[in-house]
Length: 341
Image (cartoon, rainbow, N blue to C red; front, side, top):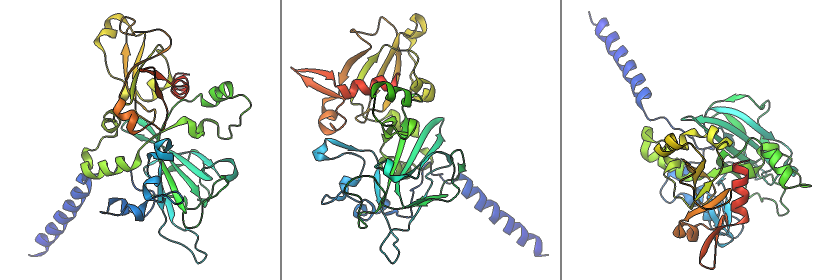
């Protein structure tokens, strides 16, 4: 007589657990190591590794080096585990489901040392995570292989090709979240930098435009399943807006969710795009414009500059002020040429 109620109660409990798991907020991105001090009050010094003689802030993303004039496009995450020789042994894990896009196991060819790049599809966006300075890459990991969030892809280390190297004390994984600028980067680089080496093809760091993983992870934790990567990118603070007289470049095809509608171009046709760039040069918003809406001459026309943002984050040197007028610098023009190549 009592078996049915017991079985029913157990079944209901199981269903309740399954429902709770199904409805609980899923993380878009996970931390790439077991170090979770980022989410703890006052835990920054236990999470970030600063540069030599500098505070932990120099290990964060942004204009945090050389008095704000040097960009650091990732997070330098401190190790938690060491072997008897004091070398790090922390597993490094995929931040999200994806596929292996690139592996470099020749540390002498990059200041990233040994590094892995994964490609993820998040809300219809191609996002690329990068894990650098690895002591080693997981045996058997191959380009094109599928990986699951939390799957080990390597061991945290301190490999690099820089003259000063990375000390045991500063051993860390350099973690990035990027948008890919152009599939024709290798061709563009050969044309614009004749005689210079490009050992990594399209996976050269210049072709990866970084977002701040720290802000993304914290915003994701705050909003739970209401977090949207598309909304996060679209709400980034803009540095400047530029008119571009070009209607067919790869960013439009890879990141169509960042393209806004414009009733005027539906009537008059598209002659180019108005592009909003953040301080790191990420094209966070693109608006099609008709010929009647594009002012000025030339392929690229600077439309506006957020002076407050430029003073706060000048490291990319995309714009400069001369005789009271704002202009695109050679760095800004170079970025736009690559974007539209």
